[in-house]
Image (cartoon, rainbow, N blue to C red; front, side, top):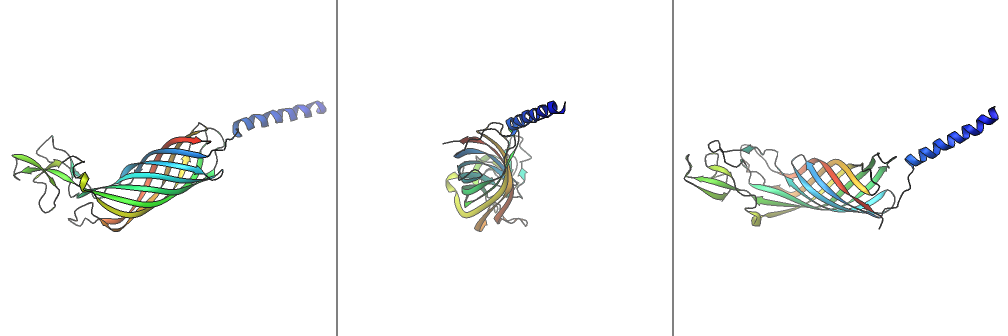
Length: 250
C-alpha cells in the first residue's frame, strides 16, 4: 500500500507547488520606464507633481520630476468682516502668498517586491533640486471710509501700517498681483517610502509618505511680522503623495 501512497503523495505535492507558483511567480516583464503623478498634501499646504522614472536595473530607477506646491505660514488664521455676511474670507496679516516650483532629480529603490497581485511593493525614494519660491503680494478689498457702513470699496495691496480689521472688507482675486511676484531661489530635499499597490502589472497606484525641506538664503516674508509673528527661511514638512501612472516596456 505504501508503494501506492508515495506516488500519490509526490503527485499531490507537485500539484500544490504548481498552484502556488501560479499565485506567487507570475511571468515578469522587464520595464524600461514609468510615468506617473498625483496630488501632494503637506503640513502647510498642498500641491501637484509629475515624475518620469527610468529603470537602471530590476530594482533601481532614476527619477526626473516637477513639483508645484503652496506653502502657508503656521500663523495664518482665516478672518471675516463681521458686519457683512457676503464678505470674502482673508488671512489677517498675510503679506504674500507663496508658491514653490521644484524641478526634481532623485532615485527610487525597491526594498520588497510584490508577492502577489494584491500585494504591495515597497520602495525608498529621495529627491533633490532647486526650490523656486514665488511670493505673490496679497491684495484686499478695502472699505472707504473706515467707519461702518462703507461708502465704497477699493482694491489695495495689503499694508499692515494702513489696513486693519476696521477697513478690510475681504480678499481680492487671487490673480491680482500675479505680475508682481518676487523670486526667492533656494534648494530642497525630500526622502520617503513609496507603497505601490496597483493590481495591474503595468499600472501604478501608490501612496508615498516622507519628509521634505525647502531652504532659502533669506527669510521669505509670507506674513507681516506683527505681534510676535516671525517668518522663516527653512521649511520642514511631513508630506503624503497620492500617485497614479503606468509602467512601459519601451
